[in-house]
Image (cartoon, rainbow, N blue to C red; front, side, top):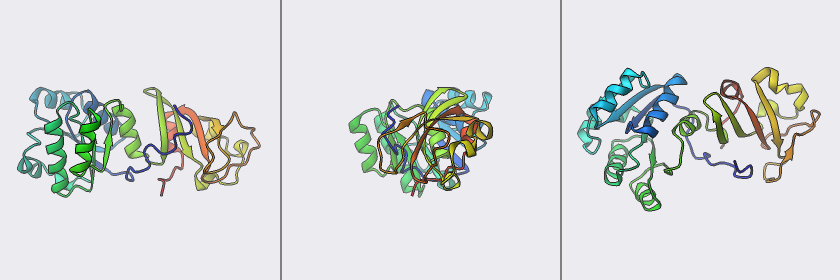
Length: 237
């Protein structure tokens, strides 16, 4: 993880309670499963009946439908306009991906995330209104967690239960020392590195316990995902 790459997900919206995922391949399944495990209501959609049945069998989505997302009427009847966030996970089929993204935006969905299989595909998705385009290398679990916790600037999943994250010092931590916060006991995380100014791209590794934190500086922490999810992180402005 590049410790100086602040804000890969700065433009993601605040948490929403309902998500729709169109495309239930490996990427789409990972997004569904992660959002579902975090307690969000998820609708999964795919043209392949077997994938839809499997999603319901595996209980990775509250609802799953088989439909052709290139048909606006099918999306409308499925209630897509009622969702705040829709993830178009049809990365390997450019035409279907672009048409679906266009359809979803024209139906009035306020925030659409679309996966691109190439740079040109990404540009096309931008042109038809995708609010955020992710590359083919993006991890579905990573995207789902970033959508629900946009205050996290960057994240590296060590395993399904543990991560290294890069976050800005929240207001609740401002002017408190590391020892006062007792991050390990209170949140199950350990502070690995700290920048001392908001615009600083240099980090102090293993900072002293008496170091006083400043709101807006950047912390790099390692710990359990459950503990990370309890951090009082606020979305970037």
